Image (cartoon, rainbow, N blue to C red; front, side, top):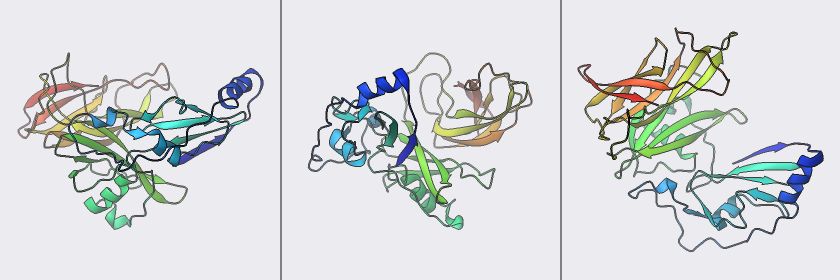
Length: 296
């Protein structure tokens, strides 16, 4: 649950940290509200609301006397699910992820079970958002690399989509996961093309600063330009803008499940290593008919 790094600080920067941490007022020690729970199966974008009270945050991320925090827990009384808190002192810092309704954890799942619904529910629950019976399993993307776990997707009766991004914890050879949430129901029409339900991560850069490889990953609803979920869609083809390669991913009940490693054919230059080109794609039905264009 904690990721800790030690840094030796000097000069003015150390003085600033001291002002932020050494003289910080104590964070209130409060009891967890009686009957508190994070009700994830409710209408609306519940993950955007400040539902985790300070008492739960402090219980999971115990502050040390005199340490400062960002956000400032002496003033903030609650944070949205999935937040993290960074604590700082004169010469040290650590970050604590408060998770969703539960604390983050790790799981040991036998290789034969890692691609099953039961195994993925266990792995995805390590994010702190338990994949209980209220979440319907939509499936997972095909695993194209044996040393990685593919993206999985869930949805509940209120149309909240969970994109589960499993991974290996190399420290103890266990498994953990992070989750991304989005609305899987119809939404109001926006401007321009609907967003593609994936994020691109540059995993390789050539000597001349072009994209050598990238990974597309995510899960989310596919829509037309009126905001309606395209439940008749069966496939989404997406890739980086300017690339000649597009990868195909299946759509289940209007939700695309995306995971692919892609080597571009075109030279996509990067001005900065942190820059990620836009994604664009096509949403198709079972007959290959174009239903909509997406762009991220």
